Image (tube, rainbow, N blue to C red; front, side, top):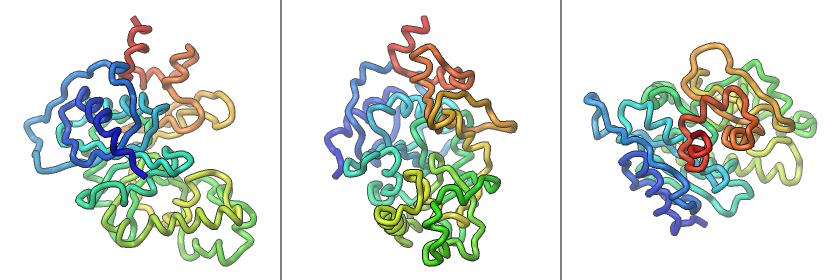
Length: 303
């Protein structure tokens, strides 16, 4: 189920970026290390304590490895304690798209000693100190919730589910007594102690099984999370997920940054910055991603 033979490749790639602790790194796809240049070495500031570990997890495949390397680079560049970042990469082969579904299994894949993790998609860059996000999560994740994320209550929540779902009281009552709001699963802080104890992976899988026969939603991996956590998400400031920068899922389009402070940029949507830059048709926001790109060939093209 897990590709343990690929661990070495990821450890070496990460070590090019910074000296990291690697005990929780489990599995990643193979990739030629020589495709990437070495980043500057980032060291802890004087205020850092070696006892505080910040766990960051990314589920990835070969096609997104370039984005993942850029994301890790951005985290280490902007954090005050880069040597306290424990980056875990994981892939679950049995899933049809590990980028979308492997996050469901982090409680099983990661070592039980990992009690809290920041989950990030591979198409993000962090432009603020990730310690701030970690600190916010410590105070936000309380009560019954196991997930913290920016939430967006102005989005039409009902559109994510079919009429079949809303017409069946036995299904739609899952939201009774709640105020469910949309949240993007590409940036989450997860309380893995509560996740494991409350069996949230099993709850998500239950809705996925219903989907196979009932067709209760249209869009892939997000609706099961909405069904389980909708109305019970610890709210994190929107600055930590400036999402939608990849544009429309069906046609090429560019989007501008939303007003307000930004700590994390997220190219969710069809367009990925590395792909648009390579073909010479970038969006303006893609230029914000380019400085974190460590792919050797792209650097040579820029000269």
